[in-house]
Image (cartoon, rainbow, N blue to C red):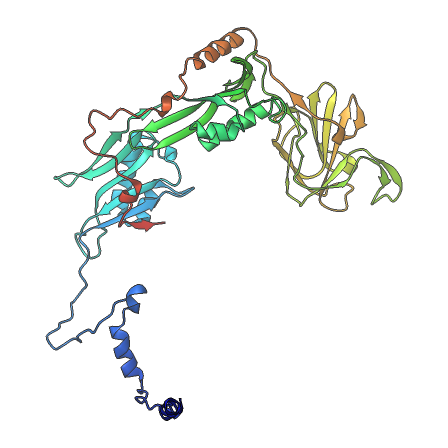
Length: 455
C-alpha cells in the first residue's frame, strides 16, 4: 500500500498552464478571404468562392443585350381599363388599343371582373426606342370562356376564343341533422358558403336550437358550376327544406326578380326587426327630459342617435316619403309613411337624399346626419307615430311578408316541383373528359411560374 501510494503521488499531474498556438491576427483582407470560402452566403442568397478579376482581354459592351422575350402577368384592378392595364405592362399604345378593340368585339370590357390576371408574352423589340411587340396574350374572360391573342406568321394579331366546357347541374345536398346541420352538411360535401346561406334562410323561419331535432333531415339546392379546367363556382341557394319523418316541415324557394324566399304556400320570407336609422349609440331616449337649448322640461317624442356629421341615414322599413323639407326646430326633416297608420320622422339632417312622394326600401339612404334646427351638435332625432300620436320607437318592430297569388303562385309551385327532380349529389360526379381534350388542364401554380407580376 505504501509503495502504490508513493507511485500515485509521483504520477500526480501538475497545474501549470499548457502552452497553445498563438492566436492568429485577422484583418479585413484575411476576413474577406475567409468569407469567400464560407457556405453561409449560399444560405442568404449570395455566392461564395473566389472570383478572377477582369484582365486586359475583357472589353466593355457598348450596350447590354436584351432578353429576346419577357413573360409577365398583369392584373386588372378595380376601376382600371383593359387598354390602360396593357400599357402599364409595357405594351405599345397602338397594339394595346388594337387588342382592347379585339377583346371588346368578343365581350363587353366592363364584364371582365376586377382581379382578372392576363398572361402576356412580349417579343424582341425592332429598335432600342420601340416598345416590345405582343407575341401572345391570354386570360380567363368568363367562367366558360378563355380569350387568347396570338401573332400569326404574317405578323398580324388574331383573337382566338377558347370555350371552356361547364357543367351547370345544380348541387343538391341532403342528410340527417345529427350533431348539427353545419357539420353534417359539410361532411356530405356542401361548400361552407352554401351551408351558411341555408342556415340563414331556415333560421328566419325556424328556431335552429328548439325547432330542429337530431333525427330531422336537411335538404337544399344551390347553383353550382364546374369547368373542365377544374374550377368550381358556387352560386346562390335556390331551395332549402327541413324534413321530419320524410315529410317537409318547412320548404323555402327563391323566387321573383328581387330573389326573395317564399315557402311552399307562396308566403314570402319574414323581414322583421327595426333597423337602426344610423350606426350610432342612443344618446337620449323617449320621454320627459330637460331641453338642452330651451332649458325647461318637456316631452322628448323620439330617440336621439349620436353620429358624426355626414353619416348616412337609412329608412327603418319600406315606405313612401310623406314630406321632405325644412320643419322648424327639426331643421331638414324627412317623414316616411309605412302604411297601417305608422309614420317615422328623421330630423336635423345636413342634406336630404329623397323627395316627397318617392317610394323607399328598408335600408335605403334618405339623408345625412347634421345639426340643422334646434340642435347642440350633429345627431339624428328619430320619431315614430301611430295614427298621428307619438310612440316610443323602441317598442315597435316591423314585419313584412309577401303573398303570391293566381298565375304567379301556379308558376311558383311548378318551379318548386321541378327542383324536387334534382338528384342529390349529381353535381359532384366526375366530369366526362371533353372530346377534344388531349392533355390535362394547366395548374395555376404552373401557369404563373417564372412570370413577372405587374400591379
